[in-house]
Image (cartoon, rainbow, N blue to C red; front, side, top):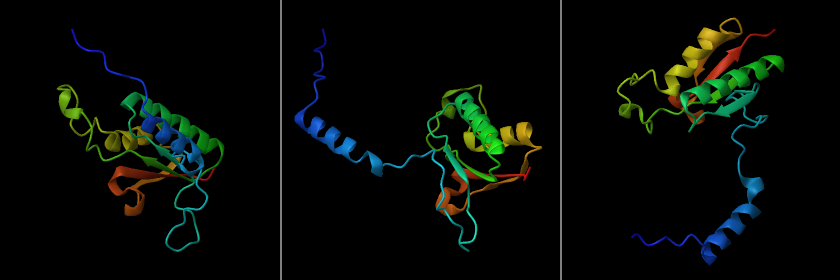
Length: 144
């Protein structure tokens, strides 16, 4: 019979937790509207809205993409940044029925957007290196 692990928090755990909750305002909201991200020429924003898709399965990620783009279109936003990741930590090799490339969000998200939102988009491009490079995309929406 295995010995039951002690699940009671230690004094250090409690101290770390209290320190963490005191600094909540310093934690970045990864899905927030960004007003101060500027391009190199400082005249226009690189993006209006950002969504991080890390850790989501394909279905949840594509649902979030749909909701985000619908919201952006309603609010007449022009540039949406999606952080897809590069697929380096994906478990794609464990599923013999999935494509090693197309099962990655970095490929599936742009394909999904092109298929379902083509009448609303101008283009989709890889983000600048400082915003994730090949692990993120910017969707440029038409002015409606």
